[in-house]
Amino acid sequence: MLVGLLLVIFGTACEKELDVAPVLSYDGEANMTIAELCELHAVGSQDSYSEIPDGTVITGIVTSSDKSGNCYKYLTIQDETGAIMIKIDDSSLDPKYRIGQRVYVECGDMVIGDYRKNKQLGFWIDGSMAGISSSQEDLYIFRDGVCGAEPEAVTITSKYDIDESMYNKLVKLENCHFDDGGSEIYCEPNASTSRNIVMADNSIIVLRTSNYANFASEILPEGNGDIYGILTIYNTTPQLVIRSIEDVHIGNGGGGGGNVNGTVTVFQPNLTNDPIANQGWSVQGDAGWFYYAAGEAFAIQNPNSTTIDSWLVSPAITGLEDYEDVYVEIDDNANPTPGSGLFEMYYTTDFNGSFTPAVWTRFNKNEILPDYVVANQNFRIAFRYKDANGANWRINDIKVKGTSIR
Image (cartoon, rainbow, N blue to C red):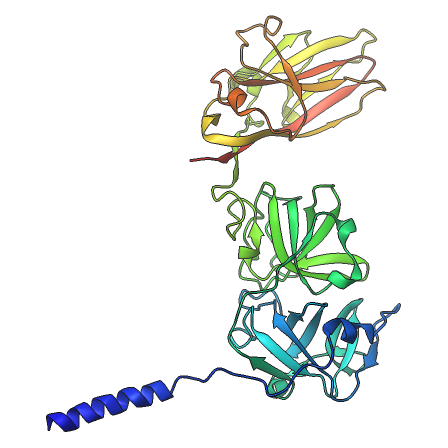
């Protein structure tokens, strides 16, 4: 009886092992590179397509994912020569095609065309590119082996780095930030949304996000860092599509490529409650700076022909010893008369009620300040205005920001 029971147990275990799916493999080889495929089609002034020779087979590594809902009804694959987008009429491509999976594509009766100048592999139906139907995917796309690493991302430091060979590739936008970081969400509720990514040279690359992405309502993170994603083009505009929020290596925005604690606002005066009267700000030197209640801002204007030298000095800004890469961000506007040195920013650590004996050091907006300065418990900033004849300045917002080191 015991022997029979053991046979049943071991027999069941063997059957379970046989249930494990075998590793998929493709019985064939590619006969055209992706770059050669792309060369078959020249993008024109309007969407069009080109035929593909019978028997064409390409291969590449999957770089896109619809797991987060942002890469909708397409795969991007790339080899050592280039990348292509494959249109598929299937809204659930994950986990069938995982990032890092090698696939072979028998192009058969497909065509290579473009949608708003972004090249795609699919079918030409009723004057536009259409995808492989979900019921026919297995006739065209074949997985081979197990998932490996994704290809190394192409590094881009400026919009002007981009050339045609980079479209549909996995890229890394290096040392960039969101124009609306800290204030806007990735995507508006009812439509796909574009947000500006500002590169280190101030050139702009657009982030394009679907309102169906599961991170659409997240706030864009603040600070500088790197952003990964699939680079596409829409007419003449380069666009980045991230696969998930983990592609954003800025602050707390995701993927582990920036400081894990992120850039935060450490100090910000409340401009709805007169900082000069109630929050320790003071006007030094000539009278001039005042709190503009109607616009909730600091403001100054000198309508006279006599030049004034007016300083707006902050209270001591403390608690910065736990932060690095500290900088001052301001939202300002002006109508200055011609000249130089009309409006300047300074810091000090030895102000004791009067600005004249203190040693002041001039700095610029968004300039990283010395750690030993911001760690001083008497660290203060000041805004100096020196002009005449109707010039004016307004500061609508002031933020001292830093990256936590704790």
